[in-house]
Length: 392
Length: 204
Image (cartoon, rainbow over all chains, first blue to last red):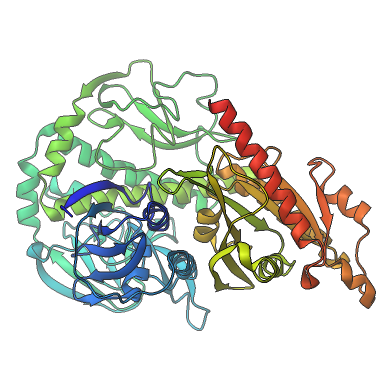
């Protein structure tokens, strides 16, 4: 048999359970390769006449390895018909493997390799452990880590309102990202290994005021990032691309602020503002254009029963539309864009933007992805809070 | 959505047993597995999920004939009721061709039945399927409990509770001793195959 890829695609579209069923029902023999940004070596599953007979990931082999692949929720797959010489270590039927794998996944016994995983974390002293979503980043590039720092449970890593431009990547442990509103400290997200602390806006200026507070939820080890190298890389990017990064950062700050306000039961302003107006991008729009704002303001709005939710207010140099390389859970799929009457837009070339993204160093690309995951997760928190309030 | 396997000249379709926990879904499948041994292909897969078990096996219905010259192979599944098993539920319900809803006749389970049926409707909707269109039969299980003096609901009441709008075939059963199990399955198979045939004609 010749090596040839006969099927490939995205694990978010076709998950492992469906893939094993598909390969099973065609009775194919070959190797299924899984590639995840969150794991440093590809996962391999060997099929003989539609049945998995062995699996490997780095030096590990066997059924347990195959089960662990059910946690690879994001990534790519590739099935090739090729000959291989492996001993049969797996004897269970494929449906047994699929159902057992999914059950373990739902029972929380499998480590999820994706932007948002679930971890058991202590919920206050003596309290029962419970599962909460924890945002994890992709594999850490240690080339950009210049020092390591340890923090104890409860210790503040950065405080909102203070000045500082240091940036860290979480190496171990979980950090609470909180927002201070008045005297209250409002928890927004929990972030774990691979996530970044410190905003990309710090690349653009010498001085940065921290927009949120980060507190170690347990013993935490952080890697201090080589800010000089990263700032240098940032400076070498095109101005359009730099603006996209800053605009992402701005969206994150705004949705975080809105979520904190709602959590404290503060009213959000202008909820009915967009009734009857025509959006410039409708929610669910399938066009994939990306624009930069030249003049005026754009508003990112989630239209919900009982009242619109204003998520972001954007201005000159910010971008709206489909950002080709990340999904932040905003327009056009899940939000609409409204504009002031003086709004002027400039269309950006999505191919050029994508190319520039592909050329980023591992660390900077991870930061961008991580920021997008933060926006998506915070937006989900924000929408849920808004929905709850509308029900009242 | 049945799958055609051109090489094997086989149509693979999926029937799912749905219903409240401990209502008798697994008992139904266990009985079918034992009583129709000749039509069962391969082993029964049984996974212990919290509060319930998830079962699966392949079934080759004998007397139903072929569709367009292809044999029919049916995957029989139960689906775990607990909310947390969303991944399993998704895999099982994706592309489902027919549903058997197993309701519990015990009076104390009345509300559980109705909630579970509603839950089924919701879950099907997520895959763009309508409970009013999909081949569906109801089974009122545990009728034998009346003999033991356990209060059960009259069939008329269960019809009113569950089948007033659906108007689908319904069967009394006591799965523990096999009564009504075959009848329920046959009815669901017949409906499912009729539905598939209709879809195929339309496609032609």
